[in-house]
Image (cartoon, rainbow, N blue to C red):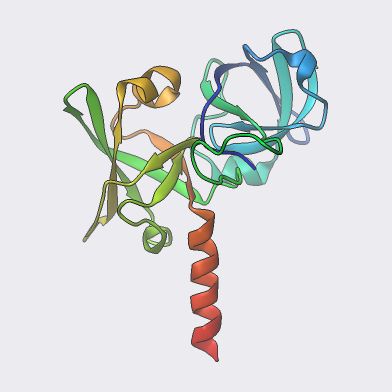
Length: 202
């Protein structure tokens, strides 16, 4: 489990395609404290550390993960939002995040809002029922609050505000229109949808 509070921005140092895709990530984490087999969320994707050294760790990214995450994410030089898994007693500063990407959103627009940025994302129809105003959502691993949701003929659009701090300590400050990002819906919304479906069949 994660919280969506980013603790480092890593950079992909190398990508090697074999059975799966081996990705080496440069990090400011003290990797002496990172166990092999530990989970690290990489831009919202929960991955297992399979190798490590001073200032770097390696993960294997499956074909399934590649197919379900944002295009161009797994390329050399790409910056990733990193978060280590929660430990018992850690502060839950964001919301409960599983590290399982539900879909991909596309940035529709970016506008200045004081020192903040107001970013609009278009999400696939299948995710639209799970996005609600003032609800929680995870964008590239970052816990955010949804400001507004609008269902349009071309798809559902939701907006968030990025304060200067979030822009500075995550990769979201460098987003551009047309770029794709990983989306994880609130885990509570998943269960509510399942309960509604189940009771609707009775």
